Image (tube, rainbow, N blue to C red; front, side, top):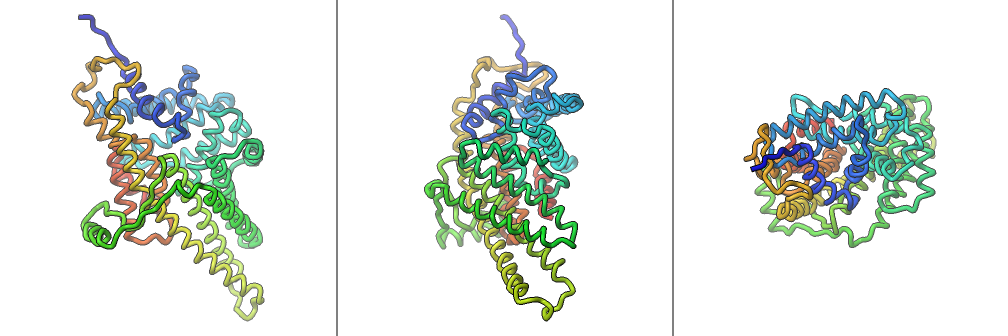
Amino acid sequence: MTSFSVDPDQVVLNQFTSFHLLAEGNKGHDALFAVIPSLYASARSTSPCTPAILAMAWILSAPFATPSQRMDAARQKYGEAVAKLRDALKHHPTAKADDALFTVLLMFMLENITATAKSMPDPRFHIKGAITLINLRGSQNFASDVARKLFHFVKITLTALPAWHKTANTRFSDEVIEADRSASTSESPTLGTRLGDVAFGIAVLREKLDRACLDPSKPQIVREIQQRNRILDQRLMAWRISVPREWETFSFVSPDERKERLKYNESARAPNWLGYTASYPDLKTVTLLNSFRMHSITIQVIASRCTNWIAQHHRVDRPGSEMSVTENVTTAHDSSIEVKAQEVIRAMVDGICASVPFHLDKLALNGQTRSLGSHSPGEPSKRIDPSELDPTASNKNQSALRGAGPPARRFMLLQPLVVAYSAPGVPADQKRWILGKSLEVAKQIGMDEEMVEKVFKERSS
């Protein structure tokens, strides 16, 4: 019998392409994954994106290997990507290339998926790297379809995360801000791009507020930011109203079911959700609406920060008798802003929680559908049996890592959950539900649960 060898990298790449690119990226579900085919096909031999993509492929798509073999291979590829990225960043042309920014963004996801409680991820490093490259690229962020998708991922996804808000110096350059404004006026708007434009405006405004709060002698700047924030809030609400009503339908828990769930929740690590639930046409829609909710929470946090800062610094040491009628009216108005902000935040957190059952059910259904035909195009029909791999690892290892559906989709679900968990004013029992559900999702992906719990608690501190 003629023997032949098979490149394990090619096998996992075929699996990765089948499960995560052809099934999702081409439908526009994941902007970051959608650019992989074109970047991989055009990558030069020194490109950092090639080993980075292979690292992700090993983590997500290696059913013939044990978990430890997958992680060892992924770490090796990750190390190669880091070395090639360092070389690329030494020269302006390669540092400004699409594959360099893509590699930094993919490393953000890779590090979070592979980290443990003993090697906690520090997303601020990748966030700072992404900002640096975006500012270096300037108008090049809008020069091609791939470049626009990468920038859109930063605008609509990264800027909503608590880690972004806790990262210092996340300032977009004036060139990038102006280029984004020009691109917004010249392109035909879609729901996604319109939301991205508002999200970008929120990110720019939050960074301005961070700087303005350092100088208590200039309250007018904070008041101007407060006014701009109201305008962005109005734009965001107008966006939500423009979404077809049938895209999100709600159902409520009956009293008997609620009583049963309360009894279960007393001892459950991941208790049942007691509020209303929502359903959507597809995963793309629920992801878009959860992005809206994340950015809406940020807007309300900015409103509260402005109100509290003005109250603390502008009226300090001034007795009520010295305040004008206008200032007294302003005080009452600011108090109403704070109340409204808390109400909106609670509604957005409830909306994120309500979307989780649909999201997980849809992923489970998709996973079952894919498992019926897991043979990838181009994959040999014979069992891959390189001597260094475990041929008995089979589907149980893949499902342990992948859960019932794609890990990338489940990882993306963790993002609105961490935002909801970190939001101010969330009741303790709801935070317990969010954390419990997040740990359940993390376990299905194969992430270190202790690490995930630490990340959630650090982000909310």
